[in-house]
Every structure is written in structure tokens, then in C-alpha cells.
Length: 142
Length: 160
Image 1 (cartoon, rainbow over the protein chains, first blue to last red):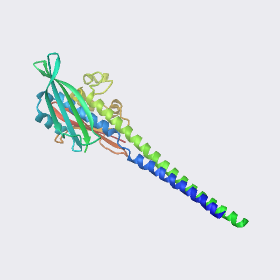
Image 2 (image 1 turned 180 degrees about the horizontal axis):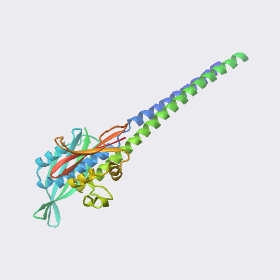
Image 3 (image 1 turned 30 degrees about the horizontal axis):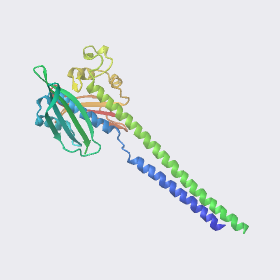
Image 4 (image 1 turned 30 degrees about the vertical axis):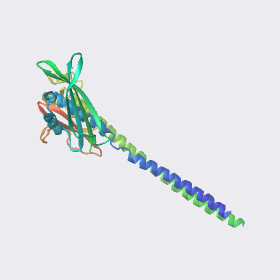
């Protein structure tokens, strides 16, 4: 009888240990979830802001890699890495020909938490459209 | 035999009860900690999302009507931009003349807020709101815009 009781107690203890292990696993996994869920949205908005400011200030119209890079560096914080591409198209013969392609920032996306924003823009010359452009900025936390 | 068997069952029941109480205490404390940390996270997320929405209103929108700065009594919705990400100095000065409680209602922040504009070199050029920055929760939003021909950062604090 004593041995049978001992087996039941051991069985209950094993169940408790399993339950405690299970709850600890849940707690550990939930604590690993990203705490600041809004940071991704904010980074995407900052990338959109940067493209809008580059467009509104006329820097994109210069098609000058150094000028664009200099403006972008002013806008990005040290906590963020970034990569940007700017493609310029010319409308010719019922089609768009890519005539310039600029790449700025870190060539490779250095992090899996990178977010991207895209903006289409126009470059005018003498009140007429000179180029159609697409700008993309990837931004991530270092 | 009867006495020994009864004693053995009591010890077994005591151990089982102790294990059960231990287990129940652990579950209840675990549940309590989880609920309170989730509630804190929800509160923080609400603050962050309302701050992001407020920053959008301030730098993307020109407000309703779009020339509200000319007739402030007709103001229905606030906005400080003449076009998206291009701030208007005239709108900024008229906004700062509004009562703080009206400003909060207009930009949609329940708690306290404060924002300033600065150039890339860190020089502050404009500030508005309650700068006490006190409270258990604070979130900081940094956005980019143009003011005149200069790139400026808008740093917005929402807290409470």
C-alpha cells in the first residue's frame, strides 16, 4: 500500500513539473515577442518622410547622387541603417526607358527588420515632364 | 495494519495538497504578472499609435479648411503643412496661439504632448505644448519635414 501511494505522489509531482515547464515556456516565448510594435510603422513613415522631403526640396530633380546622399544622411539617425534606390525613366516611343539608376547607402539590407517605402515622382524642365522617377528607401534598426 | 494504512494515506494527501497549492500559487502569480504586463503593453501601444497619428496630422495635413490660419474661428481640423511634409510658418504661429486643451483635441491626443522643430545641426526653432514631460509613460516620435527650404525634424513627445 505504501509503495502504491508513493507511485501516485511521484505521478502527481511529474505532472506538476510538466505543467510548470509548460507555463515557463509560454512566459519565455511571450517575453521574446517584440515589445515595441509601433517602431516598424514609425520607421516606414520616416522613410516616406525622407522621400517626400527629397521630392519637395527638388533634390531628386538634380539626379545627383552626392546631393541626394548628403540630404539623406541629414535625415537619418545613427540608430538606423538605410539603403535607397532611385530610377529615372524617359518616355520615348510609347514606352519608358530607364536612363539613370542611383543606389545609395548600405548595399545589402543588413537586417531582417528592414521596412521599405516607395514614391513615384516627376522631374520637370521648362514646365514639361523630363523624367518619371521611382524612389525606394529601405530602413532598419542597427 | 489499519493504523499504518490510514497514516500513509494522510501523508500522501498532504503531499498532494501541498503540490496542488504550490501549483495553484504559481499559476495565479504567473497569470497576474502576464495580465499586468499585457495591460502595460496595450497602454504603451495606444500612446505610440496616437502619437504617430498626431504627427501625421501635424506634418501631412493642411487642415480643414486648408487656409484655416486666415480665419481661425472656422477651424474644423488642424494641420500644419501647406503640402505633405512641407510645414507652413503661418500655420505654426497660429497653432501655438490656440489654447492647449483645444490643441490636444485637434491633434487627437488624450494625454499630454509637447513637440519641437529643429534643424539638422540640433538648433531648435519652434516648440509647443506642455514641456513638463512627467508621467509613467512617454513615447517619442521623430518625423522629417521641410520648413522654408530647410530640412527640419519634428520631435513629438506624448506622455502621461
